[in-house]
Amino acid sequence: MPRFDDEDFRNNNDRRDRTVPTEENYYSYSPVDLNFNSREQNVVRDNQLRKGINPCDIESAQNNFTPPPPPVHRFQSETIGDFAPPAPQRQREPRKTGDEKKPKKHFHLIKSKKKRITTIILAVILALILIVVGTISGIMGRITYNDKKENTFVSSSELESSALVKNILLLGVDARAGENANETRSDTMMLVSIDMKHRSIKLTSFLRDTWVYIPTLGYNQRLNAACSSGGYEGVVDAIEYNFGIDIDGYAVVDFEMFKVLVDSLGGVEVDVTEAEAKEVTNHPNRYGDVVLESGKYKLSGEQALAYCRIRKIDTDFVRTERQRTVMSAILNDAKHSGPFTLLNMAYKSAPYIETDLTKGELRSLVMSAVPCLGNDIKQAKVPFEGTWEYATISGNSVISINVDNNKQKLVDYIYNDVLE
Image (cartoon, rainbow, N blue to C red):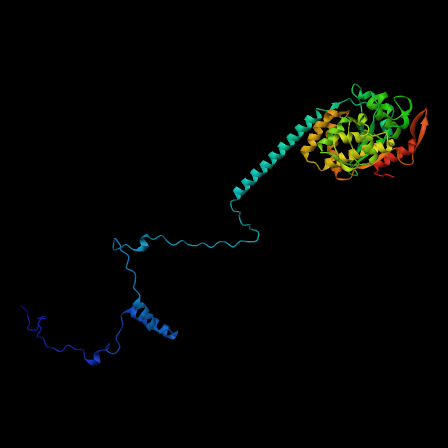
């Protein structure tokens, strides 16, 4: 029970006036908005009006926008931030200077590939070298080698020589069956000079009827008689003695080798005169049933050999010129041939070669001749023009020469590259 009469606050019949007097109602005309969100909205609305934006358009768009449903959380404290990984922080790359180089992609793979390519190339080169060396050794094994003999008739100090010039005397022997080639008269005497100083190859023919002193005989005779009296070395001795040039060695070839060389190259082109064609065609026993036609065309090995043997229709000067023509054609065609053609040609012709050069000297000569093959092959003959005359001595028709003039002209031609 209430202790006082007015203690019961639950009494609904309480009619006492509890309104706040007007003079004491301080918030009736300036209500305080405790909703901070509404105040922030008012600021945004004012900024929009200041920028010329109609707030009603924005409110209309917001009212028509349907927000996505809120995420479902298994726990009240669970939020997206509890499980989402943090956004990766992009690190700013340092500025590159001009000295820094951009690293190459897959550098180790490129380097490894280059190593493999280099290894393959080296292996191929090594294989080719072994093949060439083995082939050359096989070719050189088919050549006949003789011991070198020193010239006892003239000292080396009296001979003209140069480290840049190599002289090889090429002797062509037309020996018949049963004949000893070393005891027959040399049919062809041609000096092959490899001039590394002037990068040229020079062919010099010595006419066989040249009347000179033969050291092995002790008196004058035709030059080709030196072979029958002193062998191949006797021809070397006679040329060195009379013409004063140093000969490094000789190479003797059977005339049959012409056929092998020419056929290996597929023939050589020669301009055949009508007289030459008739001489060969009309004498089958002399030239082995070979038929020649006049004109410029490729000769086979048989035809080239017959062409080099022609001797009845003109002089020995023209005959040696024909031989140099065929030799020049062989060398010129060889320059434009592939390595396998050359190896095949050398392999087939090797059995027809006899020399006093060693295998090492032959290799050196080949290496020296390669740079000289790019230029035209030069030709000359001994005796030179204006240094000789025909003569009859002891009933023999020979060529009498001025030895000293020919000696000087030959030295100038071979060593100084001067040909008058």
